[in-house]
Image (tube, rainbow, N blue to C red):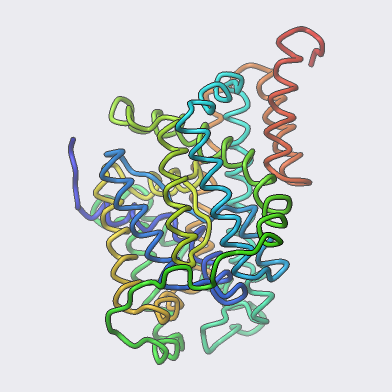
Length: 397
């Protein structure tokens, strides 16, 4: 299989930081997760996934778990329990092949609905980061928590950053000489360094850090029962819809026959193993995802070299900087992360271009509405039921 480490792969490798970093920051600072364990899990999942799948793959936080855990300031014990339970369920789905049966009842229109809804969610999240109204920024009480300047006149600094780097990304979007993703991340970090984020580096002490085994102890029975009802059961439908079925579909669309190892079963197994490791080292529950894959592809990732690049960076970050690794990443302004999310969301939402059937378009739009008012798990279930009702002639649109 071909592999490349050219500038486009470097650009594509950082394309999904806008999704990963804000949630990772919040789970470390609010929920007390281990920065070493979290970033080591992400890095190893990227590297091992790249070696196995031989095409770019994404590594992201599990959104339902992360959002609820952050909002409720859940303990590390509950989050560890959720990771263990998710690991077991995903391994059962993958090893037994049960996920193949699930995939058979999920039609293309529903897959496109998941991709469309996820894309719009990414667009919305990117916009809130640029405007300065995301939950992380609200929690910190500033639009750019790690910069010394919060506004230029009446304009929030995150908007200034977003406009500048959004224009740069748009101008360089199809450039192979100066890849947009790489330019935005490098100059974004320099921008942050110049405007006061250098203060964060005082918490960085290079050394050699290894993760602790079960740093928060074994979760209690109460942790497991709460995690199952509040985190795991709402997360599984979204994971199967977005991180398995929609992700597999998009990978085959982007990389064709090179994606032959990207199957529903293998994705469940790799996520199951990754979450087992994350739980043991105090990290966050992780998954693959169609949105992350779209982000990597949009900014230039065409081979698994991009996985080895970003994975290697996260492993070095974890082992060399340990608890201070999160401080080093604070150099990237929120506005820059928002720009990455905006372009990733657009790329994913545009996958509906091949849908011409009126019934499928109706399903997609309804799923989008349900996702925006409830969540993607509900939209996934309703989409499947509605599609089969339409196919049987029970409903006409």
